Structure formats: C-alpha cells, structure tokens
Length: 487
Image (tube, rainbow, N blue to C red; front, side):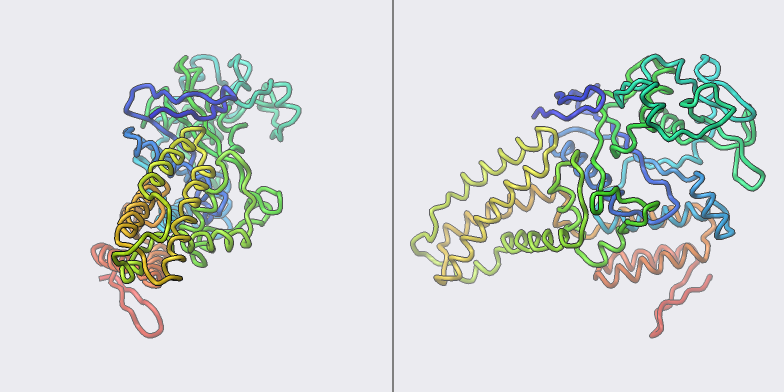
C-alpha cells in the first residue's frame, strides 16, 4: 500500500519510496540526558513510535535509530552543581528515560547509540571536513564554514543572510562568519574531554548525529525525523556536513512534528512550563497520553492542558467499554435483531477509511475519527441491548468480530491496549550493568520497581529484583520501605 508524507525539504507531500524496499531506515534525534523527559519529548517519541509501527504493519522492515546526547553543556552544568561526574548524570537520566519509555509504551529503537561511544567517528568526520576545506581550526576549536556549502539554508528555506538576521548567534572572534558552527570545542580545565588533533575537547552537537547516522545506517538514509524546532540550526547543519562529505542526499525525507505548547507558549524547561512524563503516567493510563498525541495531526501544534487529558480519558473509557464484549454474552439469545447495522460491512469501511487517512501524510487524527465513529456505533448497540435485555446471537458474533478487528488494529499500529512489556526494563538493567552500579542508580531502580508493583506489573518488579540480585545487590522489603545491600 502506497502512502505520502510531507517532506520538509521539498515543502510538499511526496509519495514515500524507500531506497531499498522493503527495508526502511529512520533516524530520530533523541534526548539530551540532563533531566527527566517531559510531554514535549513524549509527543515526538510517540509520533515516530506509531509511524514505525505503521510501516511495519505495511510490511516494511524498519531499521530505527534514536540516539542519546550524553555529553553536553547542560549535563556538565548539572554535574558541576551536584559535584558529580558528568557520566553519572547521563547514566541516571538514561535509566530514567528507559523507565519512561516502558511506561508510555514506546518501543526501543533497533540501535540507541550514545555520543560518548562515537568520539573516534566524530573526530574522523571533522578531520575529513577540515581536509576538504569545509571546516577550519581556530584556537583549539573547529568550525564549519557555511560559505563552503552552497545549499546552506535549503531545509529551512532561508538564505544565510536571512538566517543571520533572525538567529540567536553566539558571538565569537574565533569565527570567520557569525553563522559558522562548532564541530569541536576545546574543554576548560574542569570540563570533560578527549584528545584530538586540535585540542583536548568535546564534539559539537551538530556533528554527533552525522557520525552516528554514518556508522549505523550509512551516508544516505530514508527518513530523518524530529521536532520542528530542530530544522534550524541542528538539521540544517547536519545536512551541510554530511553532504559536503558524501555528495549524496543525506535524507530522502525529512519529517518534523509540531511543538507541544502550554497556553500558546512552547513547553520547555527554560520557561518552567513543562510537565514530566512521570507526572502524566502516575495520574493517567499511558494510553491517555498516546491518544492525546494522536488526536492531533503530527505537524500541528498541540496545546497541552489537564482539562484536555480529562477529556481524552473519557474518550478512552468509551473505547474500552465498546471493546468489552463479555457483558453481552450473558444476554445473547436467538431472537430478532435489535439493530440494522451490518457489522462486517462496517468493519470493512472502517479499515479502508483508517488506512486511507494514514496514507495521506500519516493523519492519525482523521484515522481516530473513524475509529471513534465505530466506537459510537458499538456503544449504541450495547446501550440498546441492555435497554431491552437481549442481543441476538448473530448480532453478538458481528459485534465481537468488529470489536476484535478494531482492537487488533489499534494495538498493532497505535500501541494502545498493550500489556506491560519488559523490553525497556531489560535495557535499563543493561545500562546499570555497563557501569559500576552507584547507590544513586540502585535507588532509581528501586523506585521503578515500587512503581511497577503499584501498577500491578509484577513481572517487571520481579525482573528488576532478580537482575539486581544477579549483579550482587539484594533487596529486602520491609514495613518502612525497601532496603538493599551488596552480597
């Protein structure tokens, strides 16, 4: 089944044609791990999680790569504030991230690379750009010269002059052009760094993703995705570097989701108007957040409020009520029909409309309208059945067929109504075992276990306990809480 998506690069809808079907390669920019993820992060994660599921449902074999930025000024600043090593901060929030992803049902990527594991590849790319004349060294820093890439600005649709007039640029006497961006930054004495041909330093943000994409996918990928706020400068700068080296299109399609706002202003940590994912899933079933995201077209802004969460919660309850066929079994009998609905024809039409909506720029909002139209019909039949006290056995069979078809579709593609899974918890514990387990990290996992027990996800709770035990940490549950000791 063919479909079209809006390509930010061409600024129009395009038929999706992967380079090597049925394989599809996707890269999304991941989180910078210095704090807990909020709803703004959650929207992007859910959108592209569902898009990946949709591709897989259509029969594509997806290689999905999503990175961690685990060295960054924000991480370093937090480490200095807490008087800790920057890597302990990164590890803490990577563990927290995996717990969040488990809780909101986002599937792990096929590859989840960390920047600090790719320093060699980053240095190699910068060296190549210097060699080609696209980059220059200045007092231990290395900058990309935007004048060396004639198509600079093609993603954001603005010329360098327009970009310079409208951008927030860090002034520096080291740069030849104010828009030139850092590929490598010399580290101060109290900052982490690595040896390089230019200085003891660390990579610039825009180079990291290029290095990880080149290593794990290749020089030209099918889809590069992320938030609309990354178009400039991040994605623009990625293109300039990658295409200067490869002379190939870096990504065939660029997909960008709209921002999450609060009262019309972007949700962000700097404005202090953010709501963490933990706050959400401790108050609501994770499906409510997924529905909130999917009820808005991915390219449109999503204005968040708890009033909207309550509204979506009520819709979710209607969905679950419609799909619960058990109560009808008790009143099914041979008798005349109570409704004129053709359940089988209704199922066929719903499926056709559902997939047609998703095939036109992944319109989950429109697809959900067809789902909830069907939910309304099911609930109308159920209400009538309880009102008169019966439903015919033939109608029950049709009702069950339509309900099961609906449930399977939204499970497979939207990730709704899923049972608890262990996949991200496994990754959490892999992250724990890859470093010396700190007391702080153990406490995070204990909190995760306690939360799992509260949610009655006992397999997850037992898994955390057993894996900690395998790593020499014994947990003891007491009346006052959970204690631990090394064995």
